[in-house]
Length: 332
Image (tube, rainbow, N blue to C red):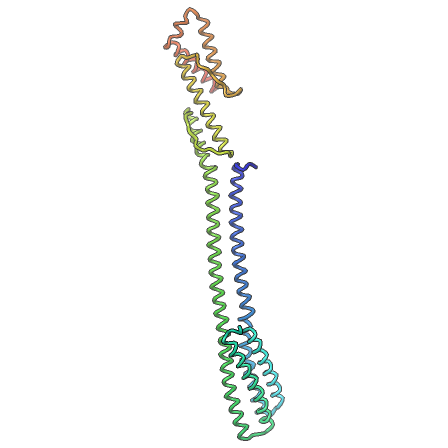
C-alpha cells in the first residue's frame, strides 16, 4: 500500500479513531481501578470499624445485663456468661485498635478504654459473685454503686465510639462518591475531547484529500464540457486524486493546444506543425489529416495557387474544412 494513497490516509483516520477509543477506555479503566482501590480501603478499615463499634456497644450492654440478672435471680452461671461476653468485648476492642492508626489520638483513647473495660469486668465479676451468693453489706453496696458509675462512663464512651465509627464510614463513603463523580466527569471530558479530535482529523482528511480535489475536478470537467479548456486545478498530490488532477490538467492543456492550432489553421496558416500526444491522439491525427488534405487541394490547382492562398478565400475554405472535421470528430 502506497504511503501517499487515499486508502492510507483513510487508514490513518481509522487508526486515529481506534487510538482515541483505546485511550478513553484505558482512562476509564484506570479511573475505575482507583475507585475500586478506595472502596477496598473503605471495606478493609471503615466497614469493620463501624461494625465492631456497634457490636461492642451491644455486647457491653448484654454484659452488664447478665451481671444484674445474676443478682436478681441469684444465678452464678449468668456471671460466667457475662465473663465470656466480656472477653468478646475485649477481643473486639483489640481488633478495633489494630484498625486504628497508631499515630492517631484515638489510638491512645482506645487503649485506655480497653484497660477500663477489663478492669470493670474483673471487678464486676468479684462484686456480683458475692451479691449473687446472698452477701449484702454496706461496703459491697458501695462497690456496686461505683461499678454502676463506671458502667455508665464506659457505656457513654462506647456509644460515642459507635457514633464516631459510623460517622467516619459515612464521611468516607461521601468522599468516595465525590471522587467517583469527579473521575467519571473527567473520563467523560477526556473521551469527548478525544472523540472530537478524531472527528476533526477524519474530517480534515476527507475534506483536504477527497472533497476539495473532487470539487476542483468536477468544476474543471463542467468547464471542459462547455468547451472551455483554459482551466486551473490547484490540487497537487501523489495520491490517486493527485494523479486524476494531473490527468485532467494534461487533457485540458492538450485540448487547448489543439484548439489554438485549429484556430491558426482556420486563419490560413498551413505551415504550423501538429504534434501528436500519443498514438491514440484522434484529434491530433484528424488535424494532421486536415492539413494534409488542404495541401493536396492546393497542389491540384497550381494555376489558382495565389488565388487560393488569399486570406479571405483560404480562411473560408479552411474554416469549412474544420467544421466538417469537428463534426466528424464529434460523431465518428
